[in-house]
Length: 127
Image (tube, rainbow, N blue to C red; front, side):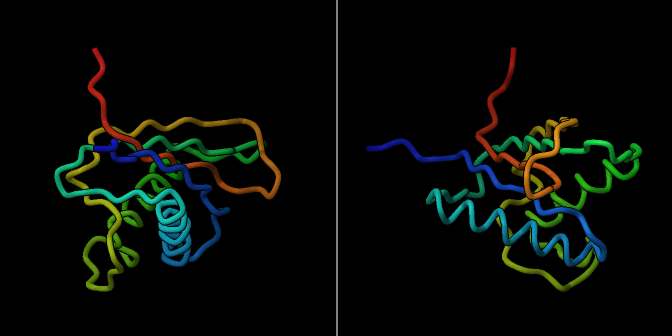
């Protein structure tokens, strides 16, 4: 029996308000990467999110970084209009599956000016 694929990498679109629309674009980008790789996550899978934000010369304070990570997690859960809203789309992962989030600020700005890169992988406990 072949091993299941767990890892996908999606380019995060450049951030532009309103945040609900940005969450929808993040969800679409991750769903496209997931479909391309043929990856599916089960309820019992433990996952790690690695977020690399390309900041370049743009100064983002701690609150804005925190908000972008929250928006990414909400988008993955299908919560487009916030945690209390009933407006949802199909979730990719649930909050209970995410065991670790690694955030990295990358000073480089790649071509096309995306906000960054999101990688979803199997959680492995580190010693």
